[in-house]
Length: 584
Image (cartoon, rainbow, N blue to C red; front, side, top):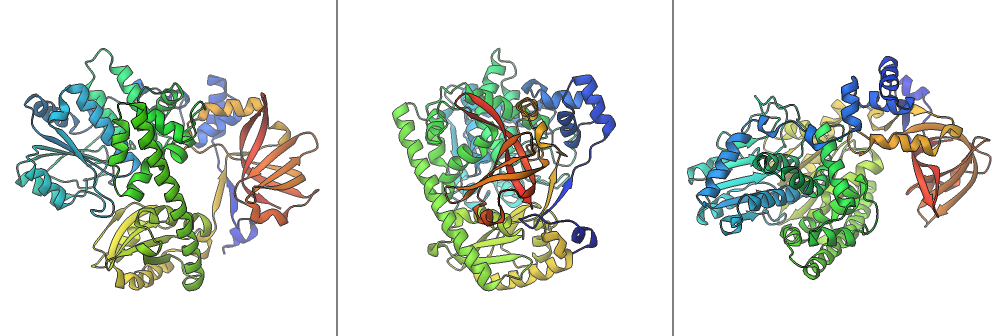
């Protein structure tokens, strides 16, 4: 451990804490010009706002502020191809990814095409790869089936940007390819045999680089419908779904465009939906009659959309849900999806238990955990990614989790900030993997099962060259310090202007000091503390940390790093803290 970190007092979770700095001049400018609470102004500066215009756009997200979609490279050409194909009634097939982003993007495009032509379903088809039988992305089988079916325009959403071979196959078989995707690094080489709609590609100066694939599908729709008198209303309606896909795909909510999509979608969802499928999905998610927040998109609605692909292998049932014509049909389909989600949760919990046991048995001193097991023994291919994320949260080490079937290991990798996972896989990729891809924090891969021990050995050797012991200590950042007595409902209401929160725009975190008055365990897994600074009593909730119950006693002084929130009970609103970490 470095001297600096050795001097810092570690928290109960073995983390060190650091304040995020903000330029005082920028903070003062925001306070004076916008009349903001100083802490709200500070949070804006921390989140990268430097001008009054930046701050005003951030605080007031609007769809009409998303840059003109016609500025996205190749999008005008894609529109021309689609419009011509529809006018000639040529066969069009949309291929989408099986995750939430791909599913909502595909449904958005289906809705747009149906608006373009009332008879679109006569020549429009779609396909979602089966997660277990086909795996991720475009593959030669998809191209061959499209050719056999006489498809003339093949359009992918959320997949395809690395499928150079498959797009060449499509062109050779007489198809025109359109790829709407966001999975590439800035300036990367994209397929030459498809019309690629991706703001990150080389030569594209479109200012908004962080749209999810469903956000790009929405922009496609905005461009298609631009001349319609009711275009704005249609686009607002489409954001109900694209907000879910955007949040679930973990794209930055510091992006003005993503903020606008999520804010519009939340407004629409809170106003109710006329789509029987979406209404039924909200009901089984426990959101009927309740205020829907951004976190509900990621933790209630998104997981249920994902569950069909993870457990059933296909998201076709989700598309059928949103195509339901009656509430009875929608309710039946939503109930099935909810059942799959509960099954996914049970499988996930069991797999995490298996992973913990395997790590303790075979890899407690590894820098990177590489663990594998047979699909039929509980290592379900559809949940290895979620399980890997849980292991990273628990141990703060990179994790690669593999599901083995028929001698092949299909894996998902998740990482920590100091370890770029896709760089690591590239460094090992000389014949080890049959496929791999991803980004710094998450990746997917496949290799022969008998080479998993080699993967473990080689990636740990690589990690020991690139990581130090310090890198395995979480660094929790906070936005400022507060005396407990200054934590008010008015302040928390003011902080609400920073919503919607997500990647790149987390809920504000504060550090405060207090004395413990009471402690109790809730439902055998959560902690509730009542703390005071002598003038104010505040409840502190620490979810899932009942394992620290023995650390607390009445009269104990603590430092709390947490998120200020409002507790509403019997018509009364009070300030509370949701702890992320505590120091004794």
